[in-house]
Image (cartoon, rainbow, N blue to C red; front, side):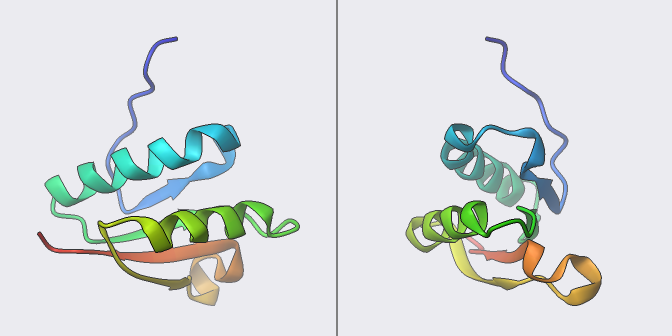
Length: 89
């Protein structure tokens, strides 16, 4: 399978990815964001039943590139998205 090339922006929508792709995707995306000088990233996981949100937040807790995270502001998705602050290395 060919790799998917994503533009490196401050928003990553997970709706187009399979759940098993999310761990590696977040690791790679955060590393590229830091390289591009982007330290605040919004991860859109959707509202649904909260399963993907819970999985994403579990991964964020373990990720050494993550400084902090919280629900996005209401105007940016509220509890359907997570605002992530990355470490400035």
